[in-house]
Length: 526
Image (cartoon, rainbow, N blue to C red; front, side):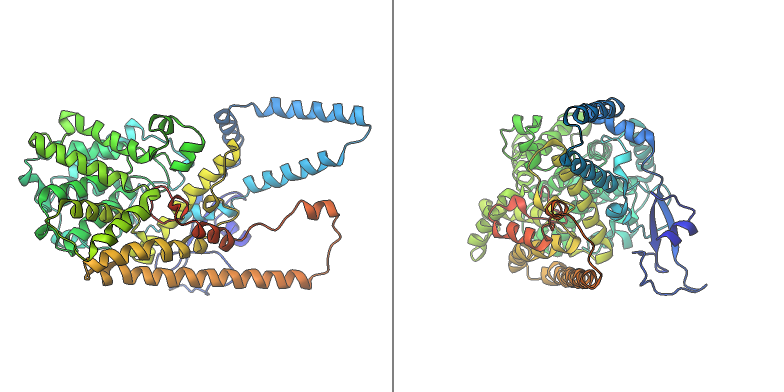
């Protein structure tokens, strides 16, 4: 790593990204394949020194305390203890050791290396920075206006037939598209499903609606505008793959697509468990009942209350009432605490499923948005894996905040207990497969499109988990072979072995009836 830092002229706290000749990100390690002038690696510095004084000052202000005054107070207390006790108690030394250890961890960027794992497969400029902690939560006015201008310029251009067909497939690569282009693709979906003509949606109103939606997705690692697009694009693809247009009417299709577009509006990166434990405004407002999902619905209809962005303004009162009811049902269904209940309802009607039965269609629509919401592992690995990196980043941000605020720490979000493969193997087995298989029972054509890729993903993460376990065992054996250093009993007592990810996830799965505690590469709140 030092050699690569030197080659990149990077500082000790910079984060590096290394690309192989194919343009894929790879880990910097002694096992790198030798390269040649014809197969060059690409090395990139993606973050400057994160330990500068201004950043520390900003963090202190954000957390509501003054670092210098706190340091002086601690020094004063230490002198007072020394005066009264004649010698510094052992507990003070131990506390200092723990503070030093924590400081080193905060200053080290090694455990944050996944921050840079955005597979930018194209050389397009102005890619959004993965360093969300350096951006404001809400999009700035300048940021929004810039994207709006580009969107309106592009919106009149003809999208090629090749892209239109690609947009209908689960293999679509979202990482190659900028936000303005994504808005154009969403416009294409509404157009190609004939919503524009069927519901008399004016093009400028649809564009204003998409812009308002874009504005209200925040700068967070996972539940952002790109996630909104991925969920919508998967829903769009499923509609075409299952030929749903011939089975249900256009109103239901409009409900499904618009629910996907709006399903995570104004998500702040902290799940329902956090909202409830921290007693946030949302949790108080919605009485701890799906606070996030209720909020996403409310924001969606705030946008639709404005005449200039109300894509339903030319519908009848009855149509609007039906659409509002459907969108609320679909978005609330993305709360994973309701996962088992919704899946069981679908299983119960599957053998006698009737597309003319409204209750059956309602359950199907909820299943469709749930599948779309957690569908990342059904995508190619080079598209899916960066999404897992983003999700872990958001999870770790939450657990760090829980620790700071003294709240219960969500086990599957703790960076000290979770690894990438451990976060996925159980989730795929116990959540994805049961859900996807039931949908494929109704639509057998989906087997090859969403079941087979998920099987491959499970094999991939299972092998990764085994490799990590072998590496851990090898490290343990090499540690045993080394001459033992003398350690005081107190030190050994205060350095317990951390919980293993498999054990933590085993507890999660054992309580899988509480499905809010299952990790996902695409669920709404874990």
